Image 1 (tube, one colour):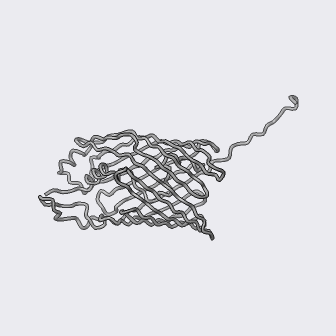
Image 2 (tube, rainbow, N blue to C red; image 1 turned 30 degrees about the horizontal axis):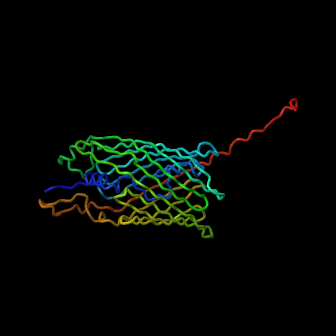
Image 3 (cartoon, one colour; image 1 turned 60 degrees about the horizontal axis):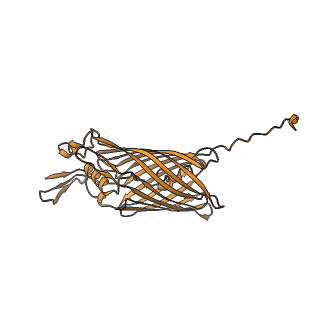
Length: 329
């Protein structure tokens, strides 16, 4: 008999299949810059984002993700933007840290205030298996023993194009993990695949203080594809309610509010539509591969995500009075 462990299973399925190689978020409306460097500084404000997420609550070794990011313009009326992103992602036995710096150049498009941002990011990815695994891991498994304490690092580069119109819409295409990346963990040498993101959103003023904001995110590694569609309703620029559907994965509800004009607080709950809602993390098989048992007390109750965002409007440029000495007239 053999025991299939969630930490090892998530690790290898994530690295080889690609669907979960990148950290997953539900409130994508607010975090465009971390996945598309073309959006860095395009709003003309200094923006800070903080996200904390627990996925598949109820599982031992469940994915846990945190994100901290900044992006803003260089100067008050500069066409350049800079930023940085730090992502911590834990999946079972595996812990990932991704840090990158990004920059963008913005081009004014048309007479309606539209901007086109072209950006690039450079960073490092560190993956490893700490010496203290989650409860779901069987320490007697030789595969687990070979992975514990190993780690590796690789360089990362990304590129993005992002169009933004403050009054109406945004649209962007970006590529991440563009450098070939192979990690070594004992005898295992998994690869990371290149990822492409397509983001789009629209703002519709419905009157009476209501604003509707449909948006979508497509993430693919050209082998597997994930699609998120979302509709958010905002009232009086203070409170919003939203609903999302992640294709073949989850239904998401989110709610949030603004404190002042530039500070946002949001929370999202994912109701998992996969079999993970009913399947235990530890599965037992017989000698010919038939499933003979699960742990019924170890199942997913969905995912929870918290978001905090704050933007600072830069001061207007200083205006200097010009004094002309009358002796020179």
